[in-house]
Length: 184
Image (tube, rainbow, N blue to C red; front, top):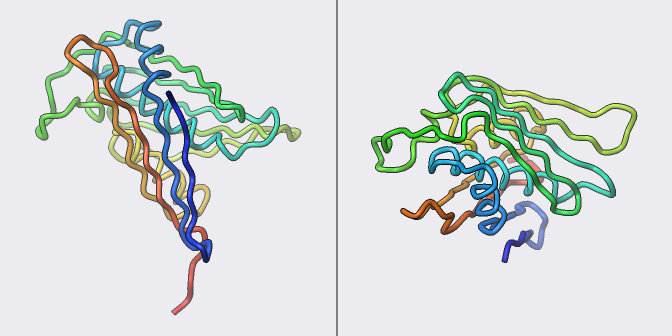
Protein backbone atom coordinates (compact mmCIF):
# COMPACT_ATOMS: atom_id res chain seq x y z
CA UNK A 1 0.00 0.00 0.00
CA UNK A 2 1.32 3.45 -0.93
CA UNK A 3 2.16 5.90 1.85
CA UNK A 4 4.12 8.99 2.87
CA UNK A 5 6.17 9.26 6.06
CA UNK A 6 7.56 12.47 7.52
CA UNK A 7 9.89 13.00 10.47
CA UNK A 8 11.71 15.90 12.09
CA UNK A 9 14.53 16.18 14.60
CA UNK A 10 13.59 17.51 18.03
CA UNK A 11 15.17 20.89 17.28
CA UNK A 12 13.39 21.13 13.91
CA UNK A 13 16.71 21.57 12.12
CA UNK A 14 16.34 18.54 9.85
CA UNK A 15 13.17 17.18 8.26
CA UNK A 16 12.94 13.92 6.35
CA UNK A 17 10.16 12.76 4.04
CA UNK A 18 9.72 9.44 2.28
CA UNK A 19 7.08 8.18 -0.13
CA UNK A 20 6.36 4.65 -1.33
CA UNK A 21 4.16 4.75 -4.44
CA UNK A 22 4.57 1.30 -5.97
CA UNK A 23 0.84 0.65 -6.47
CA UNK A 24 0.25 4.05 -8.05
CA UNK A 25 3.16 3.73 -10.49
CA UNK A 26 2.20 0.15 -11.33
CA UNK A 27 -1.28 1.39 -12.27
CA UNK A 28 0.21 4.20 -14.39
CA UNK A 29 2.45 1.67 -16.18
CA UNK A 30 -0.56 -0.46 -17.06
CA UNK A 31 -2.75 2.45 -18.18
CA UNK A 32 -0.06 4.05 -20.36
CA UNK A 33 1.65 0.83 -21.51
CA UNK A 34 5.07 2.30 -20.70
CA UNK A 35 8.35 0.56 -21.38
CA UNK A 36 10.79 0.30 -18.42
CA UNK A 37 12.68 3.58 -18.98
CA UNK A 38 9.44 5.53 -19.42
CA UNK A 39 7.96 3.77 -16.38
CA UNK A 40 10.95 4.79 -14.27
CA UNK A 41 10.84 8.41 -15.47
CA UNK A 42 7.09 8.72 -14.97
CA UNK A 43 7.23 6.93 -11.61
CA UNK A 44 10.01 9.15 -10.31
CA UNK A 45 8.12 12.26 -11.38
CA UNK A 46 4.85 11.03 -9.86
CA UNK A 47 6.59 10.22 -6.56
CA UNK A 48 8.25 13.64 -6.51
CA UNK A 49 4.93 15.40 -7.15
CA UNK A 50 3.27 13.43 -4.35
CA UNK A 51 5.99 14.39 -1.93
CA UNK A 52 5.93 18.06 -2.91
CA UNK A 53 2.12 18.23 -2.71
CA UNK A 54 1.93 16.65 0.72
CA UNK A 55 2.03 19.96 2.59
CA UNK A 56 -0.53 21.74 0.40
CA UNK A 57 -3.80 22.81 1.96
CA UNK A 58 -7.38 22.27 0.80
CA UNK A 59 -7.76 22.20 -2.95
CA UNK A 60 -4.12 23.01 -3.73
CA UNK A 61 -2.19 21.13 -6.37
CA UNK A 62 1.26 20.94 -7.85
CA UNK A 63 2.28 20.23 -11.44
CA UNK A 64 5.72 19.05 -12.53
CA UNK A 65 6.56 19.48 -16.20
CA UNK A 66 9.81 18.09 -17.52
CA UNK A 67 10.76 19.00 -21.07
CA UNK A 68 13.99 17.43 -22.23
CA UNK A 69 15.57 16.93 -25.63
CA UNK A 70 15.84 13.14 -25.18
CA UNK A 71 13.66 10.53 -26.89
CA UNK A 72 11.17 10.43 -23.98
CA UNK A 73 9.82 13.91 -24.81
CA UNK A 74 7.87 15.61 -22.04
CA UNK A 75 6.60 14.34 -18.71
CA UNK A 76 3.65 16.06 -17.03
CA UNK A 77 2.40 15.09 -13.57
CA UNK A 78 -0.18 16.72 -11.30
CA UNK A 79 -0.75 15.86 -7.63
CA UNK A 80 -3.20 17.38 -5.19
CA UNK A 81 -3.30 17.97 -1.46
CA UNK A 82 -5.28 14.74 -0.94
CA UNK A 83 -2.60 12.45 -2.41
CA UNK A 84 -4.21 11.99 -5.82
CA UNK A 85 -1.75 11.97 -8.70
CA UNK A 86 -1.94 11.56 -12.44
CA UNK A 87 0.75 11.73 -15.06
CA UNK A 88 1.67 11.39 -18.68
CA UNK A 89 4.84 10.69 -20.61
CA UNK A 90 4.95 11.83 -24.23
CA UNK A 91 6.76 8.79 -25.66
CA UNK A 92 5.85 5.75 -23.51
CA UNK A 93 7.66 3.22 -25.74
CA UNK A 94 11.24 4.47 -25.38
CA UNK A 95 13.71 1.59 -25.05
CA UNK A 96 17.36 2.40 -24.29
CA UNK A 97 20.28 0.21 -23.25
CA UNK A 98 21.23 0.25 -19.57
CA UNK A 99 23.52 3.11 -18.53
CA UNK A 100 27.17 2.65 -17.51
CA UNK A 101 26.03 1.77 -13.96
CA UNK A 102 23.82 -1.05 -15.25
CA UNK A 103 20.62 0.89 -14.47
CA UNK A 104 17.73 2.16 -16.57
CA UNK A 105 18.98 5.23 -18.45
CA UNK A 106 16.36 7.76 -17.36
CA UNK A 107 18.82 10.64 -17.76
CA UNK A 108 19.55 9.63 -21.35
CA UNK A 109 15.83 9.24 -22.10
CA UNK A 110 15.01 12.68 -20.66
CA UNK A 111 18.08 14.54 -21.94
CA UNK A 112 18.80 18.19 -21.28
CA UNK A 113 16.07 20.78 -20.83
CA UNK A 114 13.93 22.40 -18.14
CA UNK A 115 11.92 21.41 -15.08
CA UNK A 116 8.88 23.58 -14.33
CA UNK A 117 6.99 23.28 -11.05
CA UNK A 118 3.67 25.06 -10.69
CA UNK A 119 2.02 25.41 -7.28
CA UNK A 120 -1.63 26.39 -7.16
CA UNK A 121 -2.63 27.06 -3.57
CA UNK A 122 -5.91 28.82 -4.36
CA UNK A 123 -4.56 32.35 -4.64
CA UNK A 124 -5.34 34.64 -7.56
CA UNK A 125 -2.53 33.14 -9.64
CA UNK A 126 -0.46 29.99 -9.44
CA UNK A 127 3.31 30.24 -8.91
CA UNK A 128 5.65 28.63 -11.44
CA UNK A 129 9.37 28.14 -10.87
CA UNK A 130 11.82 26.54 -13.26
CA UNK A 131 15.37 25.24 -13.33
CA UNK A 132 17.55 23.69 -16.00
CA UNK A 133 17.71 19.91 -15.76
CA UNK A 134 20.83 18.81 -13.88
CA UNK A 135 20.89 15.20 -15.04
CA UNK A 136 17.45 14.19 -16.24
CA UNK A 137 17.41 11.57 -13.48
CA UNK A 138 14.49 13.44 -11.81
CA UNK A 139 15.70 13.34 -8.17
CA UNK A 140 18.73 15.56 -8.89
CA UNK A 141 16.49 17.93 -10.83
CA UNK A 142 13.85 18.23 -8.09
CA UNK A 143 16.61 18.82 -5.51
CA UNK A 144 18.00 21.61 -7.71
CA UNK A 145 14.56 23.18 -7.90
CA UNK A 146 14.18 23.06 -4.11
CA UNK A 147 17.59 24.66 -3.58
CA UNK A 148 17.32 27.32 -6.31
CA UNK A 149 13.62 28.23 -6.26
CA UNK A 150 12.58 27.55 -2.67
CA UNK A 151 15.97 28.12 -0.97
CA UNK A 152 15.63 24.77 0.81
CA UNK A 153 18.88 22.77 1.06
CA UNK A 154 17.79 19.33 -0.15
CA UNK A 155 18.83 15.86 -1.17
CA UNK A 156 16.31 13.86 -3.21
CA UNK A 157 16.76 10.17 -3.93
CA UNK A 158 14.08 8.46 -6.00
CA UNK A 159 14.03 5.00 -7.50
CA UNK A 160 11.73 2.79 -9.54
CA UNK A 161 12.43 -0.93 -9.82
CA UNK A 162 10.86 -2.46 -12.92
CA UNK A 163 10.58 -6.27 -13.02
CA UNK A 164 11.38 -8.31 -16.15
CA UNK A 165 7.61 -8.76 -16.71
CA UNK A 166 7.41 -4.89 -16.88
CA UNK A 167 5.46 -4.62 -13.62
CA UNK A 168 6.66 -2.15 -11.02
CA UNK A 169 8.34 -4.01 -8.15
CA UNK A 170 9.14 -1.00 -5.96
CA UNK A 171 9.05 2.80 -5.94
CA UNK A 172 10.47 4.96 -3.21
CA UNK A 173 11.59 8.52 -2.69
CA UNK A 174 13.67 9.85 0.18
CA UNK A 175 14.17 13.55 0.80
CA UNK A 176 16.10 14.77 3.83
CA UNK A 177 16.58 18.52 4.09
CA UNK A 178 17.45 21.24 6.55
CA UNK A 179 14.76 23.65 7.63
CA UNK A 180 17.01 26.32 9.16
CA UNK A 181 20.53 27.56 8.64
CA UNK A 182 22.65 27.77 11.81
CA UNK A 183 25.37 30.36 11.97
CA UNK A 184 28.82 29.42 13.20
